[in-house]
Image (cartoon, rainbow, N blue to C red; front, side, top):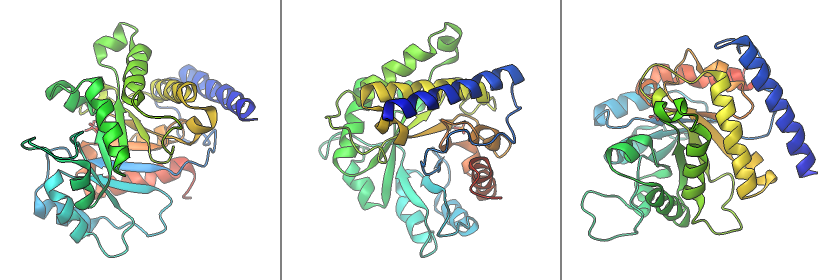
Length: 296
Ligand code: PGA
């Protein structure tokens, strides 16, 4: 039964992909969400190294999110701002917090680092792992990323695993190879049965789209994200892969979120630059809800 449903979904995804490709970029607005899979949409802010305490408080004041919001919203500030943001969010706010990085060890002589337990203690429930800036600027390889994923899960923090190809890799036809390698190695240390699918999030972030203003087209995003979901099915099971949430990241903005949200394998977004401003972030939340049909 799972297999059959999966095959039907695959065909639907393929049709969507081919339709998008034939229409060209930017023509997806208004398409119905093709496969309602029951995955709760997720919107994640990655502030990177931006904002100080006052900026965080201002953001928290300006961000009005209803407690019953159908989208799960997570904000990942610099680690020192986690307690500030936690204190500044209004009582009953559904917004969750996340870290941007963690050290795989539980404690020890690792100057400047934070463990999963410290992030949890400061209010985080999620943590970004393997962001391309960590890989490129801080020398994180797939083995380290895998250790971090395992450490986060072991200690009750939900990892948001980032994978994505560079422009050179895409031009060389290496996109799928890079995605497969990054995904496989990051998850290779995980014991079976698999960790709960609700606790693992995978973000497809093409490196060439990050901070460039040039987001992936809907067809490019759907193709890569369907590939990731298929790979998860091979690694774990079809039922498992159907439940894992996949995010798109890379110049996501209020202007492109709705068109990307209608794609069957896009469950939400990991947002850098546009997440620093509460107004823009709220606009993206509304666009995601329109795309997923959870708001009129
Ligand atoms: P961007 O960053 O939205 O500024 O492109 C995304 C990310 O790095 O997660």
